[in-house]
Length: 161
Ligand SMILES: [Cu+2]
Image (cartoon, rainbow, N blue to C red; front, side):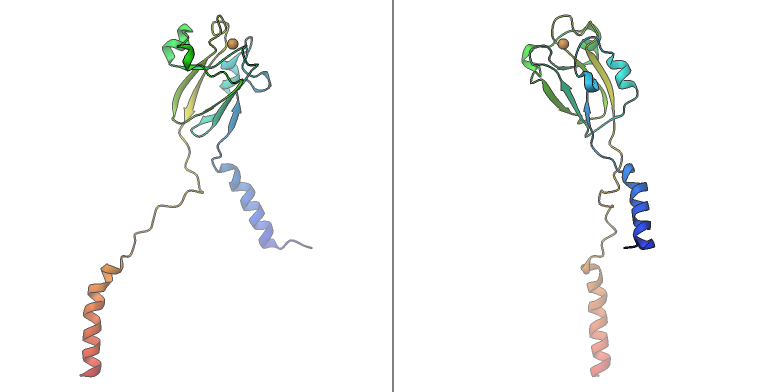
């Protein structure tokens, strides 16, 4: 069965425009290395784009590491927050809900200062073409009723008079 030029055109258009649609990504921190010591997270993050709606996944062996979301000051000094704030499932997922700088460290003694720390900048979500367009100015039926109301009796008057 031969594809019609119309179908081919549709496929070409879809191929061109689909990648531009903002899709929420799942980003595994450190890739195959996961969340560990002896890895350069600054270099890893350098060529990546993080956007609102994306999900960070921290993979590690339970008990060996953990994840704390911290602020920039705690990040620089490797100050670990209270243990109750730790994420420790071994596959911690963090949805990036707001734009801006985000800082994460491992709270196991010595790990943050050994480089197990991640800072990223989350970009605002780009406008998705799939979002509904802004509504066109609505034509309220009430805006026409006075006109119609005037028009009808006049017309009826003309007809029946
Ligand atoms: Cu660690």
